[in-house]
Image (cartoon, rainbow, N blue to C red):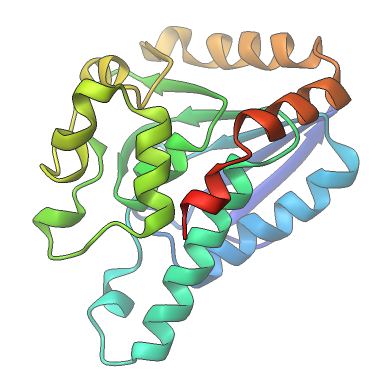
Length: 219
């Protein structure tokens, strides 16, 4: 696997750990690394777990590229990243996301793709801050937010670029559970165990129907 993405297969579960040693920016290399891990998981895992490094699930796209002068590189990175978001959201297997800290911009989009999203309580920020830093949300990002956030939070979360605490993110729809560090690994394990009890074929078919209009809505 990529040096940015750890991969461990255990008892039918693929554990993917993102770690660039910094803020886990969604660079082109990070997107490729996650994609390669998903390729492997497709044939050998019943459940996929995506986990961040200590303090960070993920930051935004690599700002050096976003604000650099190479338009082709910028477009390729964003295209790769958003294709990954769509792939994660439509993944046939259950996707559990263990949010180990901050999840901002592309990191928050990653969080929205999860079927079960467990967040670590603490002084962390979660949200789509693009409009506050001069960026617009890509179509797939808008549709992810529309699908997963509670309706009352949608405008503030997207147009308003609000960053939430983990408890606030739970109320807004970014997270399904928010727990303290002592409970975190146990809660992730419980979620994985529940997913392993499900019928994989039935899960994949139902998920495809549930999210079948997503790709068309992305334009």
